[in-house]
Length: 130
Image (tube, rainbow, N blue to C red):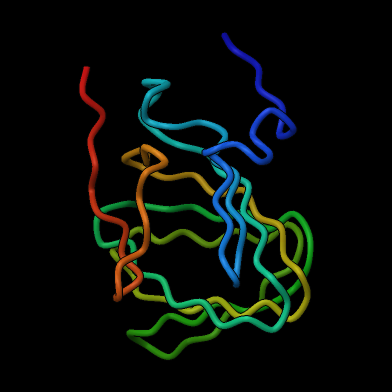
């Protein structure tokens, strides 16, 4: 067992900040658990295009409101605290927070923390060496 606090992650190399969002990577591939966990804050009024071609992601909304659009179908889902959306089919999607949204994200396979979104919104698949 191990215990981490979000304050242990804040302002470290595991705290990734962009104009649109901030992601605190709490559990990473190096922890050897088979998944990673992030607290991600999406800023109000931003438009965020993502495509996790190499990962499955579950996103649980804990605070704020917005919407997620499935780019393949155009279907839009409203998001609020208690909502979850799961990207289980390399789903291209767009997240549009109306208010600041806090989420808990789980990735499989786990991310290392070194990934950055490419021009298509994709994280490359980086594997931790044993």
